[in-house]
Amino acid sequence: MLLIEPTLIQQRIDDLQDQDLYIHLEMTTGAYAAHLDSTKHPAATFISNATLRYIHGSISGEGPYRVGLKTELGWVYSEGLTHYEETEQERLILAGHDTQGKLVVALQLSKEPF
Image (tube, rainbow, N blue to C red):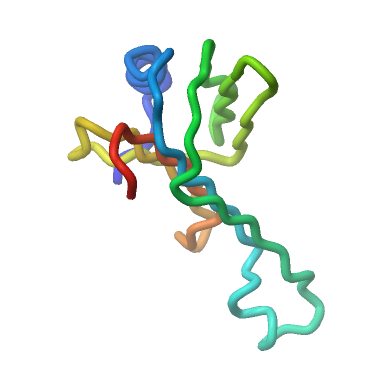
């Protein structure tokens, strides 16, 4: 994965606007390993292959980045994004890694289910 280039990601977000898409959105604070450290509060969120059509999308921040997707009825919002998958042309795959390189957040959009 490469560090996010906001201009490139904004273009990819614009290219997917007003289309029926599948979304994968995941966030974890290390919930999988919380049993090893009781001082950590385990938290995680996971949505996979839900459908979404957004009427406006944008990336903002100076890194880590935020992506907001406005739908007709509400918003999808993801923060802490640092990297994107450069080999994917049909899907937008964004991720946020902590200072140790561990995945903290993932946001993926695709015309096909994941």
